[in-house]
Amino acid sequence: MSKEKSASQLIDGRIGELGDWRGEMLARLRALVKQADPEAVEEWKWRGVPVWYHDGMICTGETSKGKVKMTFAKGAKLDDPSRLFNASLDGNVRRAIDFHEGDTVDEEALKALVPRGRDAERVPRPRLIAPPAWRCVTAPSDRAEIAARTISSPGHSHSIVPGGFDV
Image (spheres, helix red, strand yellow):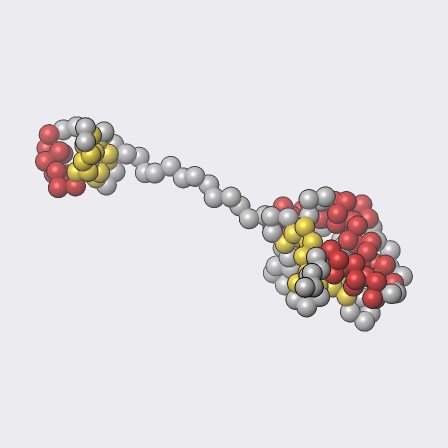
């Protein structure tokens, strides 16, 4: 029985099969993502695209004939003081950085961008919202009004009304 390869093994394979500057660049970008966010998880999506996640997608590392493209899922929301983004600038959501042969990587700026990408993509945890203010119903006239909606259990009787709860 053959064992499926992990995403990390598939990315290693892609880097090796490229065998040129694109493989070296992808390996370098991968290392920078892991340095910037050691808890980032690698996945292999869309027939061969490395993707880094941490509570949501951070970025992808796509390769084509003339470039390596690093796309940030929520890049349009990110502060980019070093102006790393140079592609997909017209969209409302994503932003990308295209690297071409011979390009230098501003490693510190990229390592600062990765946590921003992670934080922009994080799925917010549900916030507990307090129920509407419940009022105690004590007046006899209120009790008569809601008698039909009484919940009873042995030793306890609770009445629920819009905006009220009798304990």
